[in-house]
Image 1: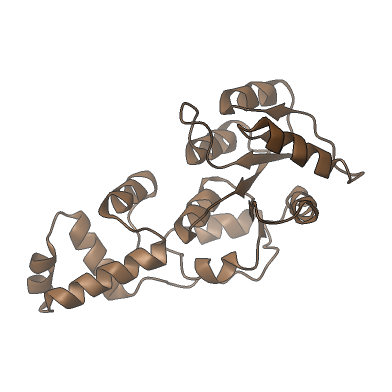
Image 2: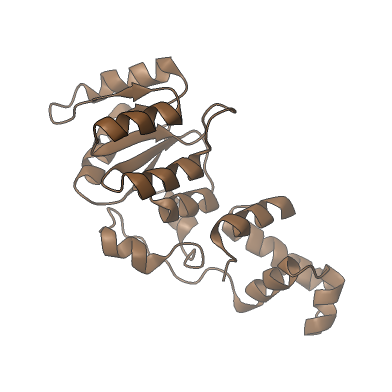
Length: 220
């Protein structure tokens, strides 16, 4: 099944997938609610979905969680215009089986659909370096227990112990100066460690950090 709020995009994807004799599109929808209603009537093996839908529609992460909760047999494949390491990691944790950039061609989409249908996670090679070390975000044991990665994905600790300390203190409401005093470091050092952690998590603002931790727990 396909989900995208742009009908022309859905039609293009359907035409592209039609080139593969082993893939059949059994539904094409413009909203998350239409997709969920259709899946209640007929399950699909793979759901190819946009991550950013219309403003009035359910957000991508919430939809992934709903699919994982209600239709765990279905394997979602996100086709996204933009993504960050945090977006990719959180999507995997929420039940996504693959992520493909919209800059890729339809042949790659067919490969991704086939990979996921065979029970393996699909990630573009360029996403792997950005994801390395996000063990604090992904429940690695859970992900690896359900799939075999289609690319060699190594998830080692990304945030240093000091970066984790800084973020935990910041989430507890401490200021940069207070954290500096607590650990006998300079304020500039604390600020640098905080910004380094943000880059690794693919976030830029304090509000993104709080949203990040509210949905999926504290990093580290």
